[in-house]
Length: 271
Image 1 (spheres, one colour):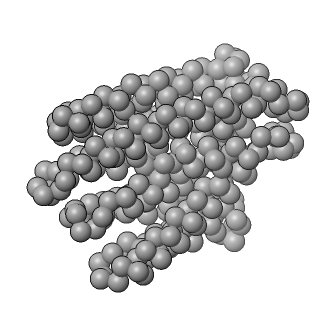
Image 2: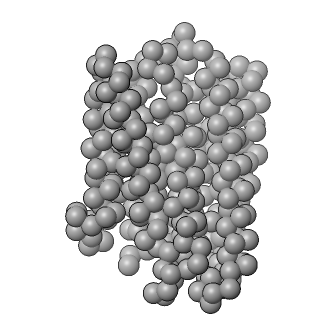
């Protein structure tokens, strides 16, 4: 197992799913098509990087993780192309397929790290849930930031969109925080040796303690504060200020979620 490659493969497939999921909340008739081109471009690039990482570590394309990620990429691309047509039912069907295969790809990849030292941990069900929520968090900040820029292009874009996405960003951060606390509680209360050993490594400053502390500050505390600042500035229709804070939020969340993926891969704790 190559921890850096595995970490980036998981991070990229999470991000691809999250950006597609969040973009789906913007109606095609309300915004310039270039908005979809940018966000779907991010989805496809991340999906390609994820598959490339999986293949680089030695997985054959027919193995579950790269196969699911490849199918997701194909469905996402087909959905993006379908938006140029007037066939809304086809687009809706392709979106549902892309989101379903994307969620499956994230879940399969995350669940593959539930074994610690060859032993499956008792909280393995938390791995795919944590990865999906992490992807939605990354997607919420990326799409919200891009949306803030699009007010300069689409003059008729309702400002309610930025307020709504700011609220979704706050919700994603709060959900990620609560889920992280719940996972730690579950691992702490687990009776199997593997769980306790993982927890010891997570808190040990000689092993992953420093990474865990940085992950909490960059991925939880910082985004919690910044997300509420974004919401308040959006409510007073200060688009420039909200977008600027979202830029800072993006840096915090990218660092935090990369470390989250690293701790999931190397420490078998989906925090």
